[in-house]
Amino acid sequence: MSSEENPPVEAQEDGAGRAEFQQEVRAHRLEKLEKLRERGIEPYPVRFDRDTTAAAIRAEFGDLAAGADSGKVVHVAGRILGSRRHGGLDFADLQDESGQIQLMATRDAVGADELHEFSDLDLGDWVGVEGTVIASDKGELTVRVDRFELLAKSLRALPDVRHGVADAETRYRQRYLDLTLDEPSRRVF
Image (cartoon, rainbow, N blue to C red; front, side):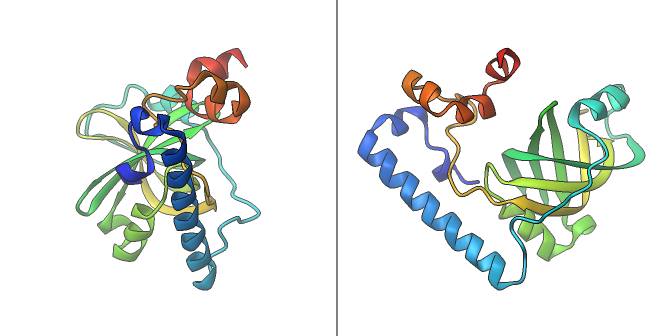
């Protein structure tokens, strides 16, 4: 989920450069997919039983004080749309059909190997997470990851998540990208 996977919108405007970049990203992700399979990890499992959504978590725990732990374990699934790494602590933004929720994976909770696996997730990957609902030190409602599972490996890079799909023709020809990244478009749809 490095900045190379989501170049600034200006960098994406160059057609030839963008196509080459997309081919490189796809090749890199296909290589990751093959390595997962070699290790015996199924990158497209058949089932994950979730018991809640991001909106339901926000509705139930929206008033949780900063730094508080609800003690409730939830199972939530969605697409990774952002990530931030801080040593032994990784944050990710998970989006499902109802909205976004922050995920937090720590070396202490998941172990060093699993934290590396979590860090290696790409933007656009679908994951299922089991974890406890907490409020971060800054007050952001968060699911502290105890266990996670890759549900679907994304093989194509998403456009810049912050700016969405800038080109109008791409927005209409590849509607799925616009619906993935633009909340107003999803509401209208």
